[in-house]
Length: 463
Image (cartoon, rainbow, N blue to C red; front, side, top):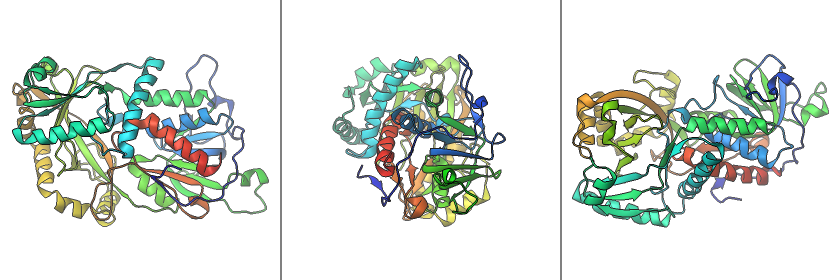
Protein backbone atom coordinates (compact mmCIF):
# COMPACT_ATOMS: atom_id res chain seq x y z
CA UNK A 1 0.00 0.00 0.00
CA UNK A 2 1.37 3.40 -0.88
CA UNK A 3 2.17 5.17 2.45
CA UNK A 4 0.76 8.52 1.32
CA UNK A 5 -2.72 7.10 0.77
CA UNK A 6 -4.71 7.54 3.96
CA UNK A 7 -7.79 5.46 4.80
CA UNK A 8 -9.09 2.46 6.73
CA UNK A 9 -9.27 -0.72 4.70
CA UNK A 10 -12.50 -2.69 4.62
CA UNK A 11 -13.39 -6.17 3.52
CA UNK A 12 -14.50 -6.16 -0.09
CA UNK A 13 -15.56 -8.96 -2.36
CA UNK A 14 -13.84 -9.54 -5.65
CA UNK A 15 -15.45 -7.71 -8.57
CA UNK A 16 -16.51 -9.86 -11.50
CA UNK A 17 -16.48 -9.27 -15.17
CA UNK A 18 -19.19 -8.47 -17.64
CA UNK A 19 -20.53 -5.38 -19.32
CA UNK A 20 -23.30 -3.44 -17.60
CA UNK A 21 -26.90 -3.97 -18.53
CA UNK A 22 -28.99 -1.06 -19.67
CA UNK A 23 -26.82 0.19 -22.55
CA UNK A 24 -28.03 -0.08 -26.10
CA UNK A 25 -25.74 -0.79 -29.01
CA UNK A 26 -25.95 2.92 -29.83
CA UNK A 27 -23.35 3.50 -27.14
CA UNK A 28 -20.89 1.36 -29.05
CA UNK A 29 -19.30 2.61 -32.26
CA UNK A 30 -19.79 1.24 -35.70
CA UNK A 31 -16.59 -0.20 -37.05
CA UNK A 32 -14.30 2.51 -38.35
CA UNK A 33 -16.28 5.36 -36.80
CA UNK A 34 -15.22 7.57 -33.90
CA UNK A 35 -16.30 6.48 -30.45
CA UNK A 36 -19.21 8.60 -29.18
CA UNK A 37 -19.88 9.63 -25.62
CA UNK A 38 -22.86 7.95 -23.99
CA UNK A 39 -25.20 10.71 -22.88
CA UNK A 40 -26.85 10.36 -19.50
CA UNK A 41 -30.33 9.24 -19.58
CA UNK A 42 -33.06 7.90 -21.59
CA UNK A 43 -32.06 4.44 -22.70
CA UNK A 44 -32.32 2.95 -19.24
CA UNK A 45 -33.11 4.23 -15.76
CA UNK A 46 -30.30 2.25 -14.08
CA UNK A 47 -26.85 1.11 -15.23
CA UNK A 48 -24.50 -1.20 -13.35
CA UNK A 49 -20.70 -1.09 -13.26
CA UNK A 50 -17.96 -2.82 -11.33
CA UNK A 51 -16.07 0.48 -10.93
CA UNK A 52 -17.23 4.06 -11.48
CA UNK A 53 -14.90 7.04 -11.87
CA UNK A 54 -16.51 10.37 -11.03
CA UNK A 55 -14.89 13.17 -13.06
CA UNK A 56 -14.00 13.40 -16.74
CA UNK A 57 -10.87 15.52 -16.47
CA UNK A 58 -7.39 14.33 -17.38
CA UNK A 59 -6.77 12.54 -14.05
CA UNK A 60 -10.14 10.77 -14.11
CA UNK A 61 -9.76 9.70 -17.73
CA UNK A 62 -6.16 8.55 -17.24
CA UNK A 63 -7.27 6.52 -14.21
CA UNK A 64 -10.20 4.97 -16.11
CA UNK A 65 -7.85 4.05 -18.94
CA UNK A 66 -5.30 2.50 -16.57
CA UNK A 67 -7.96 0.46 -14.77
CA UNK A 68 -9.60 -0.99 -17.87
CA UNK A 69 -6.28 -1.83 -19.51
CA UNK A 70 -5.29 -3.67 -16.36
CA UNK A 71 -8.72 -5.28 -15.78
CA UNK A 72 -10.32 -5.73 -19.22
CA UNK A 73 -13.10 -8.01 -17.92
CA UNK A 74 -14.47 -5.39 -15.51
CA UNK A 75 -17.28 -3.02 -16.44
CA UNK A 76 -16.00 0.51 -15.81
CA UNK A 77 -17.82 3.80 -16.28
CA UNK A 78 -16.84 7.47 -16.16
CA UNK A 79 -19.40 10.07 -15.02
CA UNK A 80 -18.95 13.68 -16.14
CA UNK A 81 -21.33 16.50 -15.27
CA UNK A 82 -20.60 18.57 -18.39
CA UNK A 83 -21.68 17.87 -21.95
CA UNK A 84 -18.02 17.50 -22.98
CA UNK A 85 -14.96 16.02 -21.32
CA UNK A 86 -11.94 17.86 -19.90
CA UNK A 87 -13.40 21.36 -20.09
CA UNK A 88 -12.41 22.79 -16.70
CA UNK A 89 -8.92 22.55 -15.17
CA UNK A 90 -7.69 20.31 -18.00
CA UNK A 91 -9.03 22.65 -20.66
CA UNK A 92 -7.91 25.88 -18.99
CA UNK A 93 -4.30 25.22 -18.01
CA UNK A 94 -1.08 26.56 -19.51
CA UNK A 95 -0.18 23.32 -21.32
CA UNK A 96 3.29 23.03 -19.78
CA UNK A 97 4.90 19.61 -19.40
CA UNK A 98 6.68 20.27 -16.11
CA UNK A 99 10.09 18.80 -15.34
CA UNK A 100 9.62 18.32 -11.57
CA UNK A 101 12.17 20.83 -10.33
CA UNK A 102 10.00 22.76 -7.88
CA UNK A 103 8.67 20.08 -5.57
CA UNK A 104 9.93 18.87 -2.22
CA UNK A 105 12.28 15.90 -2.66
CA UNK A 106 10.65 12.53 -1.94
CA UNK A 107 7.16 14.07 -2.15
CA UNK A 108 4.52 12.49 -4.36
CA UNK A 109 4.52 15.63 -6.49
CA UNK A 110 8.24 15.31 -7.18
CA UNK A 111 8.17 11.59 -7.91
CA UNK A 112 5.00 11.57 -9.99
CA UNK A 113 5.92 14.67 -11.99
CA UNK A 114 9.31 13.31 -13.07
CA UNK A 115 7.77 9.93 -13.93
CA UNK A 116 4.72 11.53 -15.51
CA UNK A 117 6.67 13.83 -17.82
CA UNK A 118 8.55 10.87 -19.29
CA UNK A 119 5.28 8.97 -19.73
CA UNK A 120 3.51 11.93 -21.38
CA UNK A 121 6.31 12.37 -23.92
CA UNK A 122 6.25 8.64 -24.68
CA UNK A 123 2.45 8.59 -24.98
CA UNK A 124 2.38 11.58 -27.33
CA UNK A 125 4.97 9.94 -29.56
CA UNK A 126 2.97 6.71 -29.71
CA UNK A 127 -0.31 8.48 -30.47
CA UNK A 128 1.05 11.11 -32.83
CA UNK A 129 -0.04 13.97 -30.55
CA UNK A 130 1.90 17.16 -31.27
CA UNK A 131 4.13 18.55 -28.53
CA UNK A 132 7.22 20.72 -28.29
CA UNK A 133 10.13 20.15 -25.94
CA UNK A 134 10.95 23.85 -25.96
CA UNK A 135 12.67 24.00 -22.58
CA UNK A 136 12.45 26.50 -19.76
CA UNK A 137 14.70 29.10 -18.16
CA UNK A 138 14.19 29.99 -14.50
CA UNK A 139 15.83 33.39 -14.40
CA UNK A 140 17.32 35.39 -11.53
CA UNK A 141 17.14 39.11 -12.35
CA UNK A 142 18.28 40.35 -8.92
CA UNK A 143 21.40 39.44 -6.96
CA UNK A 144 19.31 38.41 -3.94
CA UNK A 145 17.57 35.74 -6.03
CA UNK A 146 20.75 33.83 -6.86
CA UNK A 147 20.95 31.80 -3.59
CA UNK A 148 17.34 30.72 -4.07
CA UNK A 149 18.08 29.80 -7.68
CA UNK A 150 21.05 27.69 -6.65
CA UNK A 151 18.98 25.95 -3.96
CA UNK A 152 16.28 25.22 -6.56
CA UNK A 153 18.92 23.75 -8.86
CA UNK A 154 20.06 21.40 -6.08
CA UNK A 155 16.44 20.40 -5.45
CA UNK A 156 16.00 19.57 -9.12
CA UNK A 157 19.08 17.35 -9.04
CA UNK A 158 17.69 15.54 -5.97
CA UNK A 159 14.41 14.99 -7.83
CA UNK A 160 16.20 13.42 -10.79
CA UNK A 161 15.23 16.09 -13.32
CA UNK A 162 17.04 15.50 -16.60
CA UNK A 163 19.55 17.87 -18.19
CA UNK A 164 19.58 20.68 -15.62
CA UNK A 165 22.39 23.20 -15.72
CA UNK A 166 23.12 26.61 -14.27
CA UNK A 167 23.93 29.19 -16.95
CA UNK A 168 25.24 32.76 -16.91
CA UNK A 169 24.22 35.92 -18.77
CA UNK A 170 25.83 35.05 -22.09
CA UNK A 171 24.13 31.64 -22.25
CA UNK A 172 20.80 33.16 -21.27
CA UNK A 173 21.11 35.38 -24.36
CA UNK A 174 21.84 32.37 -26.54
CA UNK A 175 18.67 30.66 -25.35
CA UNK A 176 16.44 33.76 -25.13
CA UNK A 177 17.96 36.69 -27.05
CA UNK A 178 15.56 39.27 -25.58
CA UNK A 179 15.69 38.06 -21.97
CA UNK A 180 17.91 39.72 -19.38
CA UNK A 181 19.12 37.95 -16.25
CA UNK A 182 22.12 37.40 -14.01
CA UNK A 183 21.88 33.62 -13.83
CA UNK A 184 19.36 30.97 -14.82
CA UNK A 185 18.54 27.30 -14.56
CA UNK A 186 18.22 25.74 -17.99
CA UNK A 187 15.50 23.02 -17.92
CA UNK A 188 15.64 21.49 -21.41
CA UNK A 189 13.18 18.71 -20.52
CA UNK A 190 10.25 21.10 -20.05
CA UNK A 191 7.75 21.10 -22.91
CA UNK A 192 4.27 22.12 -24.03
CA UNK A 193 1.24 20.18 -25.24
CA UNK A 194 -2.52 20.55 -25.57
CA UNK A 195 -3.66 18.61 -22.49
CA UNK A 196 -7.29 18.49 -23.58
CA UNK A 197 -6.19 16.65 -26.71
CA UNK A 198 -4.24 14.24 -24.49
CA UNK A 199 -7.25 13.75 -22.20
CA UNK A 200 -9.57 13.02 -25.13
CA UNK A 201 -7.06 10.48 -26.39
CA UNK A 202 -7.19 8.79 -22.96
CA UNK A 203 -11.00 8.73 -23.30
CA UNK A 204 -10.74 7.11 -26.73
CA UNK A 205 -8.35 4.45 -25.38
CA UNK A 206 -10.77 3.80 -22.52
CA UNK A 207 -13.81 3.44 -24.77
CA UNK A 208 -12.01 1.29 -27.31
CA UNK A 209 -11.09 -1.06 -24.45
CA UNK A 210 -14.79 -1.39 -23.54
CA UNK A 211 -15.31 1.45 -21.07
CA UNK A 212 -18.35 3.72 -20.95
CA UNK A 213 -18.50 7.51 -20.58
CA UNK A 214 -21.68 9.19 -19.40
CA UNK A 215 -21.76 12.95 -19.87
CA UNK A 216 -24.42 15.35 -18.56
CA UNK A 217 -24.34 13.32 -15.33
CA UNK A 218 -23.95 15.70 -12.38
CA UNK A 219 -23.68 13.66 -9.20
CA UNK A 220 -26.16 14.65 -6.49
CA UNK A 221 -26.29 11.64 -4.13
CA UNK A 222 -24.13 8.65 -3.28
CA UNK A 223 -25.77 6.03 -1.07
CA UNK A 224 -25.95 2.33 -0.34
CA UNK A 225 -28.77 0.37 -1.92
CA UNK A 226 -31.39 -0.93 0.51
CA UNK A 227 -31.81 -4.69 0.71
CA UNK A 228 -35.47 -5.08 -0.20
CA UNK A 229 -37.28 -8.09 -1.72
CA UNK A 230 -37.91 -6.29 -5.02
CA UNK A 231 -34.18 -6.06 -5.71
CA UNK A 232 -32.70 -9.04 -7.49
CA UNK A 233 -29.52 -10.80 -6.42
CA UNK A 234 -27.77 -9.33 -9.47
CA UNK A 235 -28.83 -5.82 -8.48
CA UNK A 236 -27.46 -6.28 -4.96
CA UNK A 237 -24.10 -7.19 -6.45
CA UNK A 238 -23.82 -3.44 -7.13
CA UNK A 239 -24.60 -1.94 -3.71
CA UNK A 240 -23.66 1.72 -4.31
CA UNK A 241 -26.20 3.98 -5.96
CA UNK A 242 -24.99 7.20 -7.59
CA UNK A 243 -27.84 9.54 -8.48
CA UNK A 244 -27.66 12.66 -10.64
CA UNK A 245 -29.59 15.94 -10.55
CA UNK A 246 -32.15 14.53 -13.02
CA UNK A 247 -32.95 11.54 -10.81
CA UNK A 248 -31.10 9.05 -13.02
CA UNK A 249 -29.11 6.32 -11.27
CA UNK A 250 -25.94 4.32 -11.74
CA UNK A 251 -25.12 1.33 -9.53
CA UNK A 252 -21.63 0.02 -8.88
CA UNK A 253 -19.39 -1.97 -6.57
CA UNK A 254 -16.58 0.56 -6.16
CA UNK A 255 -16.00 4.27 -6.75
CA UNK A 256 -12.96 6.41 -7.56
CA UNK A 257 -13.55 10.16 -7.42
CA UNK A 258 -11.46 12.61 -9.47
CA UNK A 259 -13.74 15.61 -9.09
CA UNK A 260 -11.20 18.46 -9.10
CA UNK A 261 -12.95 21.68 -8.07
CA UNK A 262 -15.69 19.64 -6.38
CA UNK A 263 -13.57 16.95 -4.72
CA UNK A 264 -14.49 18.07 -1.19
CA UNK A 265 -18.22 18.13 -1.93
CA UNK A 266 -18.20 14.72 -3.60
CA UNK A 267 -16.34 13.33 -0.59
CA UNK A 268 -18.94 14.83 1.72
CA UNK A 269 -21.77 13.36 -0.38
CA UNK A 270 -20.27 9.91 0.12
CA UNK A 271 -20.15 10.38 3.90
CA UNK A 272 -16.37 10.82 3.94
CA UNK A 273 -14.31 13.67 5.36
CA UNK A 274 -14.90 16.99 3.52
CA UNK A 275 -11.43 18.24 4.48
CA UNK A 276 -9.25 19.48 2.95
CA UNK A 277 -11.62 22.11 1.56
CA UNK A 278 -11.22 23.36 -1.99
CA UNK A 279 -10.67 27.10 -2.47
CA UNK A 280 -10.79 28.27 -6.12
CA UNK A 281 -8.07 30.63 -7.32
CA UNK A 282 -8.48 32.24 -10.71
CA UNK A 283 -5.42 32.81 -12.86
CA UNK A 284 -5.78 35.48 -15.56
CA UNK A 285 -3.46 35.33 -18.54
CA UNK A 286 -2.38 38.07 -20.90
CA UNK A 287 -1.52 37.48 -24.56
CA UNK A 288 1.49 38.81 -26.40
CA UNK A 289 0.36 40.29 -29.69
CA UNK A 290 1.26 38.05 -32.66
CA UNK A 291 3.75 40.54 -34.12
CA UNK A 292 5.67 40.47 -30.80
CA UNK A 293 5.81 36.71 -30.27
CA UNK A 294 9.38 36.63 -31.60
CA UNK A 295 10.45 38.02 -28.20
CA UNK A 296 9.92 34.62 -26.51
CA UNK A 297 11.22 31.22 -27.66
CA UNK A 298 10.61 28.92 -24.68
CA UNK A 299 9.19 29.06 -21.18
CA UNK A 300 10.65 31.86 -19.03
CA UNK A 301 9.91 31.69 -15.29
CA UNK A 302 10.90 33.82 -12.31
CA UNK A 303 12.70 32.40 -9.29
CA UNK A 304 9.91 31.30 -6.91
CA UNK A 305 9.74 32.88 -3.48
CA UNK A 306 8.98 30.29 -0.82
CA UNK A 307 7.22 32.92 1.31
CA UNK A 308 4.38 33.02 -1.21
CA UNK A 309 2.18 30.17 -2.46
CA UNK A 310 2.38 30.51 -6.27
CA UNK A 311 5.15 30.56 -8.88
CA UNK A 312 4.65 34.10 -10.17
CA UNK A 313 4.00 35.55 -13.61
CA UNK A 314 5.84 33.78 -16.43
CA UNK A 315 6.09 33.52 -20.24
CA UNK A 316 4.52 30.43 -21.79
CA UNK A 317 4.56 29.50 -25.50
CA UNK A 318 1.52 27.59 -26.73
CA UNK A 319 1.10 24.91 -29.36
CA UNK A 320 -0.76 27.36 -31.62
CA UNK A 321 2.24 29.73 -31.62
CA UNK A 322 0.76 32.27 -29.21
CA UNK A 323 2.52 33.42 -26.04
CA UNK A 324 0.67 33.51 -22.73
CA UNK A 325 1.88 35.87 -20.01
CA UNK A 326 0.88 35.06 -16.45
CA UNK A 327 -1.05 33.93 -14.61
CA UNK A 328 -1.80 36.01 -11.58
CA UNK A 329 -3.53 34.30 -8.64
CA UNK A 330 -6.69 35.86 -7.22
CA UNK A 331 -9.55 34.40 -5.24
CA UNK A 332 -12.44 33.26 -7.45
CA UNK A 333 -15.96 33.79 -6.13
CA UNK A 334 -17.24 30.78 -8.06
CA UNK A 335 -15.65 27.36 -8.44
CA UNK A 336 -15.86 27.62 -12.20
CA UNK A 337 -15.58 31.40 -12.24
CA UNK A 338 -13.47 32.20 -15.27
CA UNK A 339 -14.60 35.84 -15.37
CA UNK A 340 -13.79 38.47 -12.69
CA UNK A 341 -17.44 39.03 -11.74
CA UNK A 342 -18.58 35.40 -11.73
CA UNK A 343 -20.26 34.74 -8.38
CA UNK A 344 -21.89 31.81 -6.59
CA UNK A 345 -23.29 32.36 -3.09
CA UNK A 346 -22.73 28.77 -1.91
CA UNK A 347 -19.14 28.76 -3.14
CA UNK A 348 -18.43 32.04 -1.32
CA UNK A 349 -20.04 30.83 1.93
CA UNK A 350 -18.00 27.62 1.81
CA UNK A 351 -14.83 29.66 1.34
CA UNK A 352 -15.61 31.90 4.31
CA UNK A 353 -17.08 29.37 6.74
CA UNK A 354 -15.46 26.02 5.99
CA UNK A 355 -11.95 26.76 4.77
CA UNK A 356 -8.94 28.36 6.41
CA UNK A 357 -8.93 31.17 3.84
CA UNK A 358 -9.09 34.00 6.40
CA UNK A 359 -5.88 32.73 7.99
CA UNK A 360 -4.26 32.39 4.56
CA UNK A 361 -5.20 35.99 3.72
CA UNK A 362 -3.60 37.31 6.90
CA UNK A 363 -0.49 35.21 6.31
CA UNK A 364 -0.09 36.49 2.73
CA UNK A 365 -1.81 39.86 2.85
CA UNK A 366 0.75 41.87 0.88
CA UNK A 367 1.00 39.16 -1.78
CA UNK A 368 -2.78 39.05 -2.18
CA UNK A 369 -3.08 42.83 -2.50
CA UNK A 370 -0.32 42.86 -5.12
CA UNK A 371 -2.06 40.11 -7.13
CA UNK A 372 -5.34 42.01 -7.06
CA UNK A 373 -3.58 45.18 -8.17
CA UNK A 374 -1.94 43.38 -11.10
CA UNK A 375 -5.31 41.90 -12.06
CA UNK A 376 -6.82 45.38 -12.32
CA UNK A 377 -3.97 47.28 -13.93
CA UNK A 378 -2.10 45.89 -16.93
CA UNK A 379 0.75 48.31 -16.41
CA UNK A 380 1.58 46.63 -13.08
CA UNK A 381 1.91 43.24 -14.75
CA UNK A 382 3.91 44.69 -17.63
CA UNK A 383 6.32 46.29 -15.17
CA UNK A 384 7.00 42.86 -13.75
CA UNK A 385 7.40 41.30 -17.20
CA UNK A 386 9.88 44.03 -18.18
CA UNK A 387 12.28 42.73 -15.53
CA UNK A 388 12.84 39.82 -17.89
CA UNK A 389 12.13 41.27 -21.35
CA UNK A 390 12.52 45.08 -21.24
CA UNK A 391 11.18 45.52 -24.80
CA UNK A 392 7.62 44.56 -23.81
CA UNK A 393 5.19 47.49 -23.46
CA UNK A 394 1.53 47.83 -22.52
CA UNK A 395 0.65 48.25 -26.19
CA UNK A 396 2.15 44.79 -26.92
CA UNK A 397 -0.33 42.81 -24.82
CA UNK A 398 -4.00 41.85 -24.77
CA UNK A 399 -6.18 40.35 -22.08
CA UNK A 400 -6.41 36.59 -22.54
CA UNK A 401 -8.08 33.51 -21.08
CA UNK A 402 -8.32 32.45 -17.45
CA UNK A 403 -8.25 29.21 -15.50
CA UNK A 404 -9.38 28.23 -12.02
CA UNK A 405 -7.12 26.17 -9.79
CA UNK A 406 -8.67 23.79 -7.26
CA UNK A 407 -6.42 24.52 -4.29
CA UNK A 408 -6.86 22.38 -1.21
CA UNK A 409 -6.63 24.35 2.04
CA UNK A 410 -6.50 23.04 5.58
CA UNK A 411 -8.29 24.60 8.55
CA UNK A 412 -5.14 26.48 9.60
CA UNK A 413 -4.94 28.32 6.29
CA UNK A 414 -2.08 26.24 4.90
CA UNK A 415 -2.06 25.29 1.24
CA UNK A 416 -1.98 21.51 0.91
CA UNK A 417 1.07 21.14 -1.28
CA UNK A 418 1.13 17.44 -2.06
CA UNK A 419 -1.35 15.14 -3.75
CA UNK A 420 -3.91 13.74 -1.29
CA UNK A 421 -5.75 10.44 -1.75
CA UNK A 422 -8.03 8.90 0.85
CA UNK A 423 -11.09 6.81 1.50
CA UNK A 424 -13.32 6.52 4.53
CA UNK A 425 -15.08 4.23 6.93
CA UNK A 426 -18.48 2.57 6.79
CA UNK A 427 -20.22 0.76 3.96
CA UNK A 428 -19.54 3.39 1.30
CA UNK A 429 -16.22 4.63 2.68
CA UNK A 430 -14.72 1.15 2.40
CA UNK A 431 -15.68 1.03 -1.27
CA UNK A 432 -14.41 4.44 -2.35
CA UNK A 433 -11.10 6.13 -3.12
CA UNK A 434 -11.00 9.93 -3.34
CA UNK A 435 -8.39 11.86 -5.31
CA UNK A 436 -8.59 14.89 -3.04
CA UNK A 437 -5.87 17.26 -4.15
CA UNK A 438 -4.36 17.07 -7.61
CA UNK A 439 -3.34 20.59 -8.67
CA UNK A 440 -0.49 21.44 -11.03
CA UNK A 441 1.45 19.37 -12.05
CA UNK A 442 -1.44 16.89 -12.17
CA UNK A 443 -1.75 17.06 -15.97
CA UNK A 444 1.97 16.34 -16.40
CA UNK A 445 1.71 13.59 -13.77
CA UNK A 446 -1.59 12.11 -14.99
CA UNK A 447 -0.23 8.83 -16.35
CA UNK A 448 1.95 8.30 -13.28
CA UNK A 449 -0.97 9.17 -10.97
CA UNK A 450 -3.24 6.78 -12.85
CA UNK A 451 -0.78 3.93 -12.39
CA UNK A 452 -0.62 4.58 -8.66
CA UNK A 453 -4.41 4.80 -8.43
CA UNK A 454 -4.78 1.52 -10.36
CA UNK A 455 -2.34 -0.14 -7.94
CA UNK A 456 -4.21 1.18 -4.94
CA UNK A 457 -7.67 0.31 -6.29
CA UNK A 458 -6.47 -3.23 -7.02
CA UNK A 459 -5.08 -3.65 -3.52
CA UNK A 460 -7.87 -1.86 -1.64
CA UNK A 461 -10.78 -3.47 -3.46
CA UNK A 462 -9.13 -6.86 -4.06
CA UNK A 463 -9.72 -6.70 -7.81
